[in-house]
Amino acid sequence: MAMASSCHQVMLQAGVATTQLALLSSSFHSTSSCSSSSSASYLGSKLCCNKASSSLLLRNCIRKMASIVERETVRMALPSKGRMAEDTLALLQECELSVRKLNPRQYIADISELKNVEVWFQRASDVVRKLRSGDVDMGIVGYDMVREYGEDDEDLIIIHDALGFGECHLGIGIPTYGIFENISSLSQLAAMPQWTEDRPLRVVTGYTYLGEKFFQEKGLKHVQLSTADGALEAAPAMGTADAILDLVSSGTTLRENNLKEINGGAVLSSQGVFVANKRALLERKEVLDVAHELLERFEAHLTAQGQFTVVANMRGSSAEEVAERILEHTDFPGLQGPTISPVYTTKNGNISVDYYAIVICVPKPKLYHAVRQLRKAGGSGVLVSPLTYIFDEETPRYRNLLAALKS
Ligand SMILES: Nc1ncnc2c1ncn2[C@@H]1O[C@H](COP(=O)(O)OP(=O)(O)OP(=O)(O)O)[C@@H](O)[C@H]1O
Ligand SMILES: O=P(O)(O)OC[C@H]1O[C@H](OP(=O)(O)OP(=O)(O)O)[C@H](O)[C@@H]1O
Ligand SMILES: [Mg+2]
Image 1 (cartoon, rainbow, N blue to C red):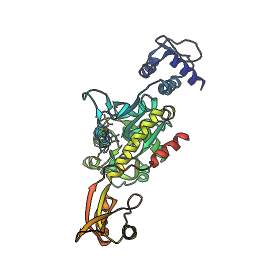
Image 2: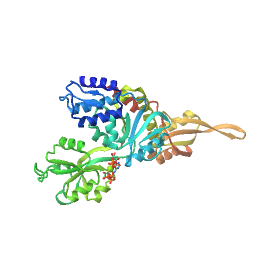
Image 3: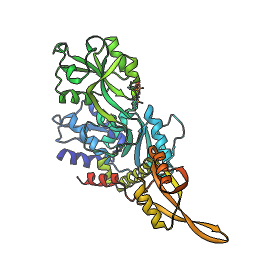
Image 4: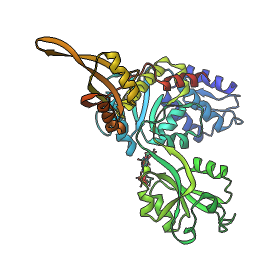
């Protein structure tokens, strides 16, 4: 604590900017000249430290200080490449937020609808690292990345956990042939006599943090993890690993490389999530305000995406009588209840009301079922159109966020 507050003071006095902090952090590793002062201090452009203070403590200190550096803009990090990049931009676009990048090689952009927001494009792993350090306030990234590079950091807070793209899971894959031919579960894999201290089960993965935790929790003793950046599915056939721990979506890559999943071998389900730095949300109102607006836009779009607006004319004697039929004989009452309005027709020069138009929302997979129920309940002429947004009074996710910030 003492370390953190003295760091804080020194950093503020020196007016160190976030990027400088990052430089400081790296220069700390290379500097050999250390003073005997009792706390880390910033003198001129040199970082000096007590020999006793561990580099880890100082790095943590610098990391935590980053968010305290005054910054007027709200920073959002988005994946710069890979399959998440396009989907993330598409989601923002669908929420009427277009990210303006002057050219494809630029890593900063803006969103004209959100004046105080800076968008920074980063590799997925760096999105998480920079969220942890406080260099960015919020971001969109796969949940797998949050868990792997977030290392259970309490400063990371997930605001929306299901953005509806990048759906996959992290799971173990083993060969379909040889000694694994009859192995179909994690317990069978663990019980194989082949794995010893001298000859452990060799698993190649890009997820060493999650992998280690998983095998430890499952009580597998003789496991050795190694890493590679991609095309992990080749490793068992090459003989460089016995198994892999990687993302699976359609299962095609596993299949095409003669690998299979096993029962109990799924480590984590993942999809795109909206995540933020908890301290930034707590300490800077503008960060919470932007997070709230983005959450509302995401929720409104994602909720609406799964639904159709259905308008139907119903024969009836009064709005109440039509309402009763809808509520009793269909499974689709609308958001709070059906919206019902009279349809005015002219008969022999007189205006009369024999029909009522109802408006309801129907989940997409249930559309035909709804049409049949409406017809049965006296509906004629059913119009179906896509729903663009559903803005609820207050999203439960925002209530959850506020509760999490208090805890
Ligand atoms: N097969 C997949 N199906 C669906 N989502 C996936 C799949 N593979 C990865 N993802 C998601 O997309 C994210 C980015 O993966 P991708 O392979 O595109 O980039 P990356 O591997 O992080 O980047 P790089 O190739 O630079 O290392 C992953 O963290 C995961 O959330
Ligand atoms: O189950 P599937 O639908 O086949 O998807 C799974 C594959 O997708 C990812 O690789 P990616 O395409 O990102 O290539 P990479 O190895 O270069 O990361 C992942 O690492 C798997 O290899
Ligand atoms: Mg990849």
